[in-house]
Image 1 (cartoon, rainbow over the protein chains, first blue to last red):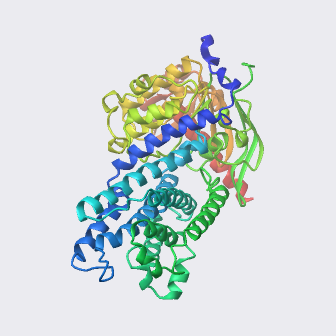
Image 2 (image 1 turned 180 degrees about the vertical axis):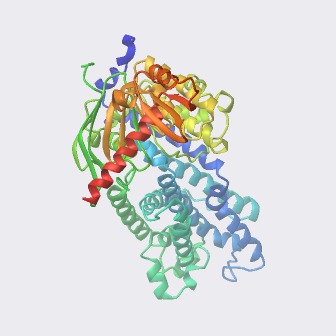
Image 3 (image 1 turned 135 degrees about the horizontal axis):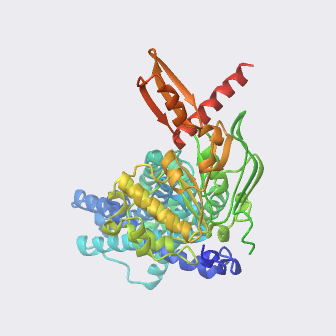
Length: 286
Length: 291
C-alpha cells in the first residue's frame, strides 16, 4: 500500500464548522445551485414565479372597463391590484416556495445526503435565502414592468416611496421565507407538501387584501387577517403604489407603516425561533 | 496520526425500537485499508448498523468509533473524511451529473477531480444530462460518485450495486479495487455474495440483529462448511457425503464397476455457506423461542 493514504491531514488543522469564510463561500455556491435548479422546475416557475403576473393580467383584462378609484381620481384595475400582487409574490416566493421545497428535499433524501457531508447548515440556509431573494426580486420586477408597460400603471416618482418599497420587500420576503422554512416541518411527506401549504397560502391571500379589496371585508375578518403578516405586507405595498386618497380606507384610516414593520418583524422573530427549534437535516430514527 | 488504530470499532452495539432489538450486541473492527463486507438477509440489521456508524441513528448502548470519533457526535471535520452511499437514492435531479459533482466537490477540503470521478463511474457520456433523466442504475452511479468525490478515508457502501447490469457491476468492482489500492477503508453491505467475495477482505454475517459469524471471506463458516460434498443416487435414494477426500470416495463407489447415478462433487460456494449459516441461525432462534 502506498504512503499517500493518510493524505487528508490538512483537514485536522482547520475546523470546517467554525470558518465563516467557508460558510459564506459555500453559501454563494448553494445560491447559484438553487437558482439554477429553481428555473429548471416547470411547476415552481409557473405556480410560484409567474403566478402574480398571470393573476395581475387576468384582473387587469377582466375589469378593464371598471374604475377602482373615485370619480375625480379614477384608478385602473391593474393599478388597484398591483400592490396586492406584489405582496402575493412575497408570500409565494418566500413561504410557499420554501415550505414545499424543503419538505420535498426532506422526503426525497436530499437533506439526508447533506447530513452526511461537511456542508454547514448555515450555508444551506444562505442558499435558500439567496434563492428566495433572487427569484423574489426578478418576480417583483416582472410584475411592476407588466403593470407599467403592459397596462400603463403610473409608478411613484418620489424616492421615499421606493425606499418604503425596498424595506417592505426585504423584510417581507425574509419573514415569508423564514416562516416557510418553519412550515416545511409540518407536511408528513413530500407528496402532501403542496396539499398542506397551498391552501394555507391561498386562504391568507384571500383574507389579506390580495384578491379581494381589504376595505370590502367585514371588520371581524380584517381583524383576524391582521394577526398574520401578509395583511401588513400588502398594506405596506398599498402605501407605495396607491394614491394618498386611499389611506382613509385602511383599518386605522392610516397606512400605519410602523405597524407594518412591527407586525412583520414579530413574525420574523417567531419564524426564526421556530426554525431554530424544529429544523434538522433528518429526523433521527424515523 | 496513529495509522495502526482500527478505522471502525464497534463493541456490543445495541439498538432497540421498543422491545425489538434491531441490532443486538454486535461487535467488529475494520482495519485501515481493509474492505469489510456486512452480509445478511433483509431486515437483519445491516442498514441500522451502518447508519449508526454514519451518524444517522443514535445507538441504544454499546461503543462505536469511526476514525476515532463517536459517530453520534461527529462534526463537519469528521464528515469531510467520510464517504457515504446510502441505500436509497435521493435526488431532486434538476442539475446535470457534472454540475452536481462539481458542487459537492466544493464541500470537501481535498476533493477528487470531477472528470476523473465521472469516468470512474462510467458516466462520461451522461455528464451533461440532468440527473432526473438518468436510468435507475445510472442514478445509482451518481450516488457512488458523490460518495467518493471528497476523497474519503472511510467509505460506507449500503447495497451500492442494486439496479446495476452485470457490466456496470464489473466496472464498479474495478472502481472499488482502485479505491482499495489507494488505501480507502470500506464498509460494504450487499446481497450479492459474489460481490462480497470479489471485494471483501473480511466479512460478517448478521441475522436477526446478531453477528452470527465473522472472519476472512475464505474462512467464513469454518473449515467444516467448506468440506466438499459428494452426491449420488444409490437404489433411487439420494446420498450426500461430506469428505476431505472426494476422489477416494468416488473411487470406492466404483469398486463394483458400475457408474453411480447422478454423481456430483460440490465445493460449497460462499453463497452455500452463507445460506447455511443464516438457515442454521433461523432454526436455532426458533428452538430458542419454542423453549
